[in-house]
Image 1 (cartoon, helix red, strand yellow):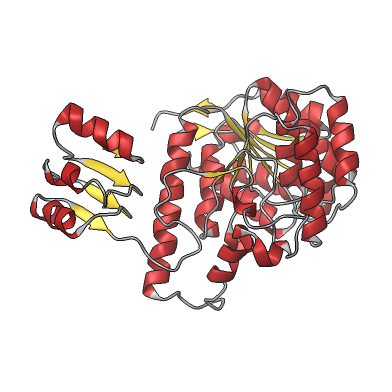
Image 2 (tube, rainbow, N blue to C red):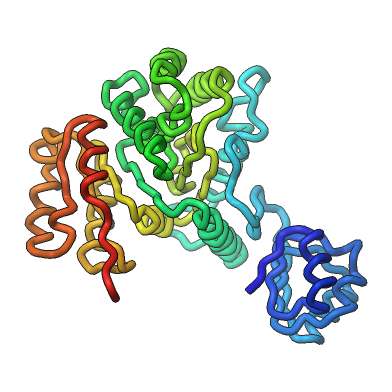
Length: 373
């Protein structure tokens, strides 16, 4: 179905096709263009959160279309037609003016709204619908976005890694190398190892010395729990290096106390963490690298393994464990995964390495395998 996200596209389509039949019109204010809608048929047309006057709405229904109304009083757009842009979720917060990130930023306001429903309780019907509509819109926008990025490689890892840790530098070097390889770097969009990978991708067009300078700027506040100083340091890096490369973040308001990392240029943020995690692993067909982490990262390891084990998407992708000591002794997931894999196709695509260069070498020499379904 043809999707349209602005008035110009609607006018062009009507002029060319003479109808709106079988299209989706998303988030377009048509209240001043009622004649455009009423002059054509709308058989099978879906209007999502569009401005429609009474006459246009009656015409849509009478000619076989359907309209989902806008939902008032929300701090987000449930029908948004595109991913969040870099910095968009920080809107309302400025480190040079009064008010903290927790009070002012759009990111925080959305998290506060979602937290009105106590843990373990179902949201009110309209709130639940708003969340589902939003996450569906993000799914749709992400699918369109990835049409231009066929080789996605994901980096998973702990949010507690400090910007001053050696592990942070290693993951940043890896993100930089992946982007230079021509792969599209995606992460869970939070702090720690996730931020490091997006930072590396952002700096990939620069000389290697840029990473040293960026890490020095970030060291002013290495811990995301002090969000205002942490984000201000990130802004200093973005001002110093303002022409970085594209990458993707896929965070969630389920972990809403974590600020969305600043170095991804496109952000697919979800309310439902389960959809976010499974979806991020599903799009990473070029491979997934697991930096050290805790329960969340371990969960992602076996979610990815399940996709490979049952060849859910028809692609078996490499899985790289970064830090041999951690993944074979501290949290020995790699030996368990090898036992699980047995003789299956993905057994040969599991690697355990140390350092960014070794991770890149494994990924280069172990491309994904497409399986007939």
